[in-house]
Image (cartoon, rainbow, N blue to C red; front, top):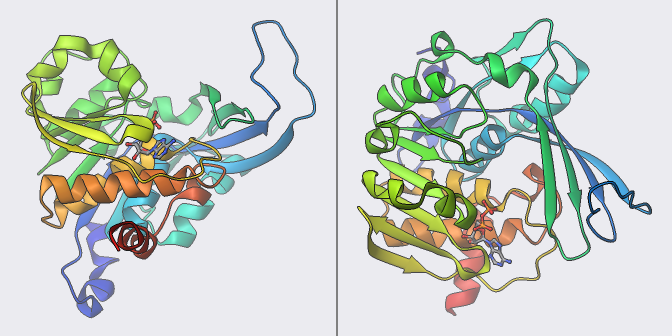
Length: 300
Ligand code: ADP
């Protein structure tokens, strides 16, 4: 695959072998209003501040994996508009390979409208645009050690990516009905508490499930039996947007690097915690060095 070659130089100078991750998913531009509180239906809340950040669960997880030191290819679709440029800016700057990120004409780049309140709680509405057009024929994940998908793109595309993956990670977010058999084909399924409630006993079909627990960290279940539990770091949370995506990207890379499940969970919970201490999704994602430093401080 073309994108493998773009990491060859980095691979040569790296002291440890570089894992290759393909993320098949959404790219959005996040429009974020930080308000004193979240509005009730029909209500207007004023006095908000405003920022635009690149986002989308796919984009966020790709950048997280990249900041953790993996070679990352983003397989996605954006619109032929200025939002597409803005939505991919941090991926490009961060060294994510965008060769397989294609432009769809006649539609807009995915947009997420986000409201965050003073306590860091959020409400999100997504207009998927070009993300809806990411098709099976866009997906070639040969050569990737790990393939990471979420559910903001068409399900046949997710199924194809997971089926053809060497190691397929499915973050079942946002929760939606899945084709029969898909959970059983994943090597790893990641859900938060809301998603775990949505899928209920269906999650027992998956080989390995990691459930994130917000400030309480994360738990891993092997066919329904708890096999690991890790607390999160205690931090001053500013904004929880992107914490789950940071967790998923980090977990995927650590597992691809050969870390044990518990060790990978420790890194992922620490990365998720750090992400909550800064506002926005992608700007908040920590580097591997930051995660290691935070863990050292905790353990010393
Ligand atoms: P999501 O963002 O998908 O709803 P969670 O809220 O479970 O997922 O958060 C994902 C991870 O981010 C958690 O496992 C944890 O490591 C970290 N995290 C989230 N919120 C906090 C918090 N308030 N304090 C510390 N860590 C947090």
